[in-house]
Length: 328
Image (cartoon, rainbow, N blue to C red; front, side, top):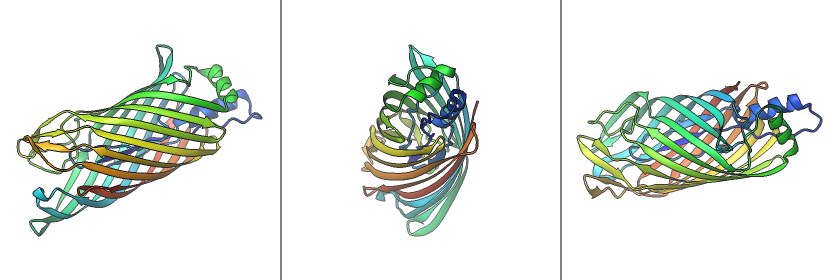
């Protein structure tokens, strides 16, 4: 299971600011308010809850961020695995780079994210207490997104003028998130940091900004390639996993914002060597995040994410994260 949060603040126009000052604030706090990251590694399942992913960015901007997160929770495994009272503690550190650009007359962005994790999983295996530790690189993430409606491709003074004049806007975006099998993976282990397969998640987002308020809805579906080296040479297949999420945020001033989020994911039943695993997922999540500016080019973000499974298998978790990012 993976919950990923990357976020930035929305510009709130102030008519008494100079164009140059407003430009810099609007550029920085569109997304430079940092991200938090949480990845829970249950094989074959991934989900994210990420506000402000469709923010209007100036063309040619670069963002670099780092984040750390701590999460713990309880895991309910399929009874066939003979694991009971599963628990985990997971620490994650990550770096992310974002670049904005223009493509076919639209504003677009590409995100590259690399996490590193250290975790402990414990439980009863056939009634006997046992635990396992994992430390290493997790899977890399690559995302491409383009704003199909709204958020015109602008830079410099044109971008600043547009943000000053725009108090009400609607943005429609289309994206593709890819999880790459770069993480540490051991074929003879059930718990791994890497997935040993590709996951493709097309995304469709709608954002409506009015004054200091912003409402956002994103729908997506995750499609997984097969893992032919799953747990002692078995083949793991997985059905598509469908996700919906909504976010409501308020910007107090450039870079200082508060966002409440919720999301639900359903599907993703696994098949192992042609036999259904009866592990359909149904996960409810909620989050609260806050962006805190340092100056015009740097900012922090604090976030909490809670997740609860609605099925017999899955994980209940609580995670806190702290991020920092810079723009140039």
